Picture 1 (cartoon, one colour):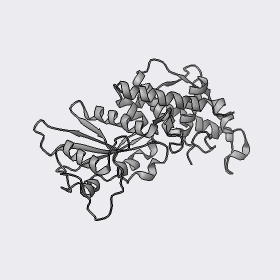
Picture 2: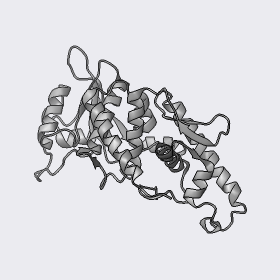
Picture 3: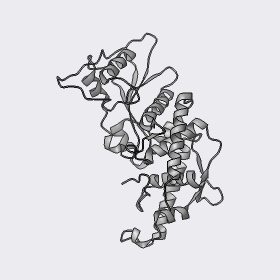
Picture 4: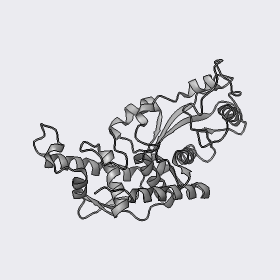
Length: 312
């Protein structure tokens, strides 16, 4: 089970969990070393390891080495926005990094907190809903990915209005799909049906047949439980009167966590184009003043919450 604040990672934490823990420690103490990890994770206790491990020191070294590789992968995936670095002399001490692009650095910290805080009980800070911010951030990333000609709509909880109104408005924006309809006679209880952001590349003729991306956004660490929830073609057939777009929408999945590269291809077979934490950060250019202000307020409040935790 992945660790969630205020808890610590388990002694069997994956490299990504340890990397997140180390980054959070740097935000608290301006540094984190391998010794810090051993102390805080309780890895000096023989009882923490299963039978069959001959040398726990070797196991600790293997785990910290894997974490260091993960940190290096993150730096490579979002080089202008990764706010941490490894001390060049020791190689085992993680420090803050200066010189990052401010909006990218802010986005990285937001996504880190949005991964490790329980976003059911700690999604609202300073009156701002972090899950709604996630959708707004992902919309910015998707628009930058598709390019300057693209249009992006936030469809999920961050966009107000009834589900039927949001579907009809989306059809109008896309210039296809017709309007909202319910394929069954049952009452509609859907809020977004797994669809959070939509992006498309229109032509000046405004005719159908274009690239369109339907995306789902997830904070936290349980996103793998929802890899198949969003089915763009089924969504169109279920809720739009024309039942089908001329070209089927692509599927995308946006997550706050830094995805495990060992599972990357397998996960993408189910979720489509995967935008994990580092990819989102890499795509951030200009957040815009309203979103930047909201992100800053939420992230600073989350940082204050982190400072109040007793980890020692």
